[in-house]
Length: 126
Image 1 (cartoon, rainbow, N blue to C red):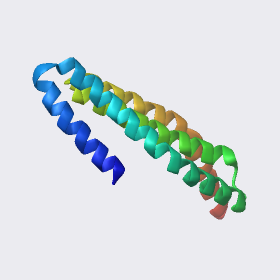
Image 2 (cartoon, rainbow, N blue to C red):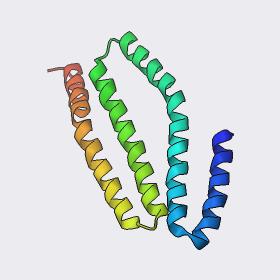
Image 3 (cartoon, rainbow, N blue to C red):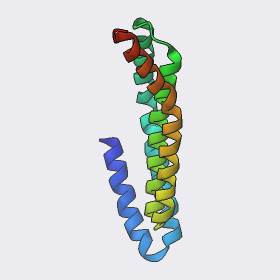
């Protein structure tokens, strides 16, 4: 509820500011986005701890979980950056940020895809 309330107040202020000082509205939008992002990072830590414990219990390689978490992080950061650019009226730059994020995710996903393929091949009869 706090995040929603904060977002609502920030939105009202941004709409008011945008009419008179567009550059300040953009800065306020970026600041509000960063504040919301920082607010959700704290609970995210407990989720990451649980995922790490489950990975250890399942006797999986932590490198794969690390890669998966990097992929999720890239997706969130890319989305945030693209939305900031869209808010500033720079849709073209937002699309380039999204493309760069997708390429980075594909590069990080290669080891995971190889692991899945190797696992499937070991399950198939020769």
